[in-house]
Length: 286
Image 1 (cartoon, rainbow, N blue to C red):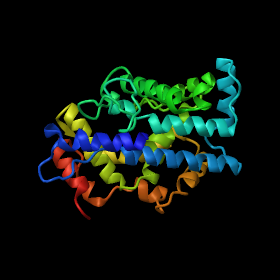
Image 2 (image 1 turned 135 degrees about the vertical axis):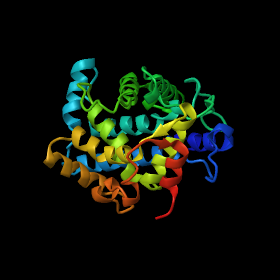
Image 3 (image 1 turned 180 degrees about the horizontal axis):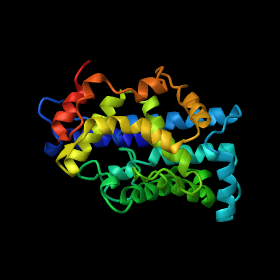
């Protein structure tokens, strides 16, 4: 349902928005779309398959204990965590395409009141987008969650997980339970499980940023920042290898080397260029 709502936003809002149109580029690319949501959900499944096999580089078991201690709720087991992460990641970007947190489930799906464009709280001092996403996730659990929707502890955990997706580039650690796995799967692992290339996804992110705040972007520093952020988020080399092994279970044959690689044609793009130029270069063949 979440992916379908993102697809509806693409059809009804983004693809026909004059301000988003880029000369010579069709369709207008995006990042916070159904492809990204499907990718993080697939990445989550890989994480929990690894956990079932005895690999826990994200410290999920440790954070489950910390969560119980902090909230007084029962300690979530692996299946409860898998459910909570799945719901949270399915809903985590719905706030980017919604004007409010109201959900009106009907023949058209979630029935969100769509925003005017892809919204990104990375451009704001407060996490308004993630707060909306958390509210939507809670409303969806109550409306369609069956037994899950009637478990307050699960709803609290899902809302908490959604709020851990707030992104600040310079921030590489946080004491909040589950902040680390959420950040790594959302910001790094998603590129391994995308149906489209990383370059196409970044072109979509630039397109969204361009509508909100037109201007320029330094392409090479942005492209190299993914591997740099991964190394800062996961400073222990052994832990990085374990995390990469999980992400490399993707169905597309993507490895750390292929995802982090920066094609040579971008090595000269060290100074900011207009978004339109950056997007065209990212989507150009070769």
